[in-house]
Image (cartoon, rainbow, N blue to C red):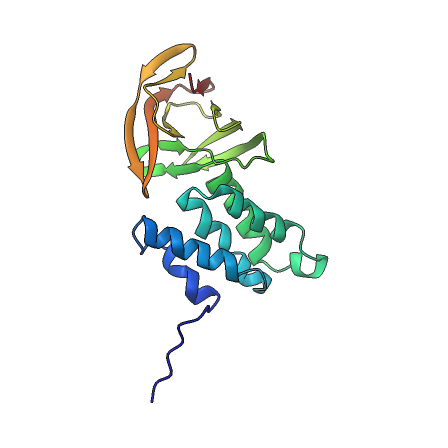
Length: 202
């Protein structure tokens, strides 16, 4: 006879959220609360998944909580490959919201800095054969530098419903959409080689 467990099961309990199998909404929100209430005693390898669980649903403070646990793990455990590699991934992909699409010659940004982090910067980020530098400030200002000789496309995103995003001193009307159930405002631009552009919320 098969024994089924309805309790908390570490990785197998949160991989549905990590892979976005579950639809956004009150059920997923309740399940995120269930994971938060039960994951404190998980091993460090299991916890390395947790930022990927919370950030996609806009729960940046919970995601940041477990990023710090990975960072401040004891020295022996910090040598586990899961910890440094996933920490870098969480920083670039979630805190700074950088998503590269090399076939489209495009980089997208959507910051999710937690309250403790006022700014974050990363340089020499590869986008196909190109390199970019990104500075995120207060979830309301993004600076992108094209380190390459040729142009690159940039989709600028911020969470929330805004009529305009200011790009290099000029307000541009936004496209408002949803991403995993969360409202985002975006505009698109192209940055020439070795040029820098600054986007900020009004």
